[in-house]
Every structure is written in structure tokens, then in C-alpha cells.
Length: 244
Image (cartoon, rainbow, N blue to C red; front, side, top):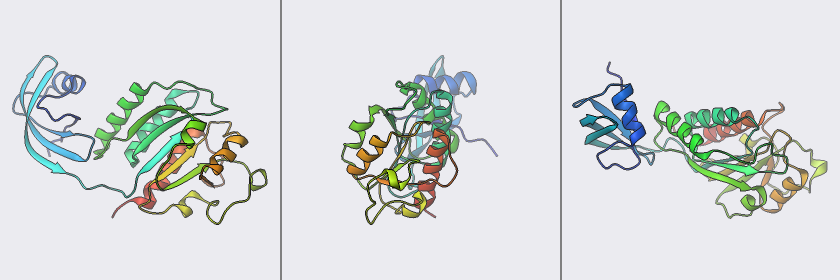
């Protein structure tokens, strides 16, 4: 069976982006007449044939347009404090895309060990993982934002914050909130989950989040590293929202 080659083409304009063209022509040695698959990252695949391949340019003709059905419900948004070592964030970005989610944000928290994230590098990882796992949509990537500014933004649906503080440290819970994240997730409802740095959110940050409509949740009894907690949260959201 012939291998299907997938390339990211956000603009379906008859020519692959330079980096994708280099991979097709120089690395994979594709040439005129070869078939390839394009993905726009917005829910559509395209079957295309190469019409010209020279240097770092690759031109194509669309043979078939194939809109894809979403693989999950709702809008899954993960906001995390970046880890000190960026390879852990990169690992998370790759694996979360393979599982499937919609949006990734980075939080500048009180106990953060990293205040700068190279968004271009993370975006390339999202694209690579999207192509590798044949995902219909590319996750939206947002820049680093101060925790206080992030939680004060209006957001649709349910909002959760994962932390390790016990109930005695926090205001009384309302009728909704608490318990395991998986148990309180509602299928089809847009969901935002916050994951803190290795030293956790500060108690003041948690209180501020609760004041702004976030609900406290747990990811289980194990104490997890930031990137592991973030991946567990994405997996829980995906399982609850996955379509058959």
C-alpha cells in the first residue's frame, strides 16, 4: 500500500509553504505527478498532484476536497505554566495534539521558573504532530499572559483550575466544583483547564481564579509534574468529548 504524504498548507493557493516544499522535494524526493495530501488545519483535507517541483518550490493541483467531521465535541482549552526545561513543554505540545485538543495558552504565574516561551518553536511542533496523527484541526496557540489577566478574560463554558491545596485553605465550594476533573466535565461544553507550575499556583492565584468563576478540581491522588498534569487533563477532556 502506497504511503500517504501529508503536508500543512494553511493557504490553499497552489503552492506549498517553503518549509513544507523543502521537505517534499529535497527530503522525500517527490516530483511531478506524485500524489500528496494537504491539510489546512481548519478541518479540510485535500488530495493533490504535484505539477512542478524545483529547488525549494512545490506547486500542486487540487484533485479532491474532503471536509472532515470533528472528532470531538466542544472546545478544549488547556492553559499551563511553562516548565523550566522547554523540552517538557514541547513533549506535552506534541502528545496533546496527537490526543486532540483545540487551544493552548501559557500562564505567567507567581511561582513560574520560565517567563518566556518561543512560540514559533511550539507552533512547529503542533504542526508536525498534527500531520503525523492526521488531525483535522491545528490547535490554536496563544502567547504568554499574566495569570491575573488571563483569568479575567470572558470565556464560554466551564472553567477549572487544578491545584494541590486542601479545602481548608480555600473559600467554601459552591454546589458545583471539586472532585475529579473527569467527573465534572460536561460533554459538548467548551472547557478551559488551568495547570500550574512545579511549585503549584499560589494560594492567592487559586482564590482569584475561584472569584472569577473557575472551579477547583483534582487530577487524582498522584502528584504530577506540570507537563504530565497538563496531558492528563487533555486526555480527560478528550475522553469525555470524543465522538464515536
